Amino acid sequence: MESAQYDVILDAREDRCPMPLLKTKLSLSKMQKGQSLCVIAGDPGSLKDIPQYIELVGFSLLSVDQDDNIFTFVIQKN
Image 1 (tube, helix red, strand yellow):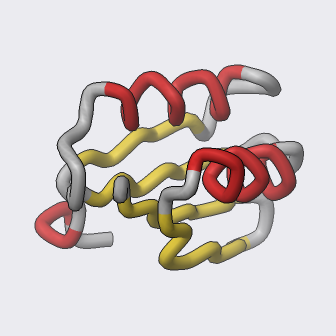
Image 2 (cartoon, helix red, strand yellow):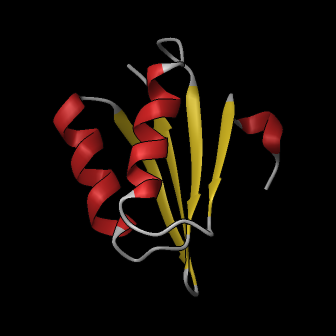
Image 3 (tube, one colour):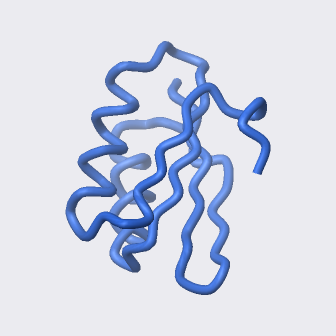
């Protein structure tokens, strides 16, 4: 993964629910409009929680990838 593609990278692979979502919210709150956030999570609950939150707040979920038990989300703050 190339960090230059994203403004912020959040590594939440070691965190369990609800921490990946809470850390995602915190990261997004510190970001400027138009910036992108890459979230790497290891908790399967993130697959449901993060996309639901992004839809709720109206940001853009640019991609969701799964590699074994690692989930990667790319979010753009609108």
